[in-house]
Length: 376
Image (cartoon, rainbow, N blue to C red; front, side):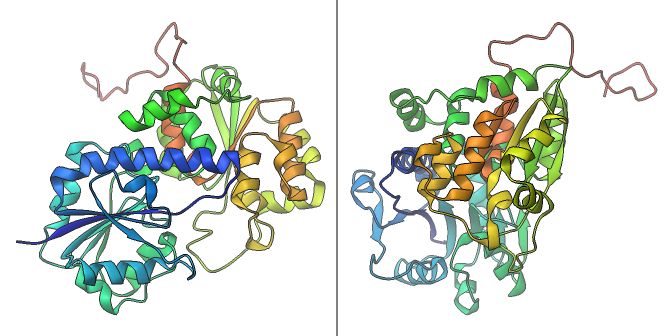
């Protein structure tokens, strides 16, 4: 019988308040995930540099070496050998917290396969994955982070598969905005819900963005690493029209650093002019800021990024990000700022949250007609 092991990786966070807010949210999400995983696997490992929080969870805690740069591939190889892993369920600590028992059973079913294979929540930028024959990783050149894990396994000849996109598979806690959306949609397991009740955030623009999403006369602009399938999911679930630009997909998985159109526009005209131009085309904006502001392919500290997400411009030390945050706050329309999860799993949550407390007099969209007297 195969020995199936789950490994949850949790990276330590910096000291700023927004970073600590996200860190605690990830830990709560991991607790919910572990509770769902427990009946389905033979052992649960938590791999982290901060072991204190995990020691009460009835799991095996593996401490990463604080004096050595973290390398996901090396950590995976080491734990597979040391814990006699036949099949592996890998999770970043912010991912998988919305998975149901039935979904976990599906992951286990894949893990029980006799042939090598890998199943990803997102092949192009992995947040969690299943490897059915963990020994197959021994000869693979594994990446330092999980973003390119799908490419690495596929290039090594391991058959790769992907899960259907849903809020369960697409949502990942990576920024403060992700936690704000969880709270607004009333989502999350017991630990996450308890945490968000203890530390609520009064977001300055979320309600106004939701107003725009539920108004037929408004246009909402999306920009960043938007998956076309998730955009297509959003359209029939909101009342507004949508527009925007998809840019930067795979920015961390691919090696190239091609300049992006919106990034060049921001650089050439400045953020104030950028939002002035956008004001003529939209009534609200949902922006994945990372590809737009990753000048030269680099990002500032998490403290700066997270403070920007919450419009705390006075806490942003990077001058480019501070100027952008100030311009977004001063824009004549509401702007929602975040990372990849905002325009991925976050759009599912926005489509739910925007209707809370709001009603529509008639159906948003008509039924399709198939040439007979029944609906499809």
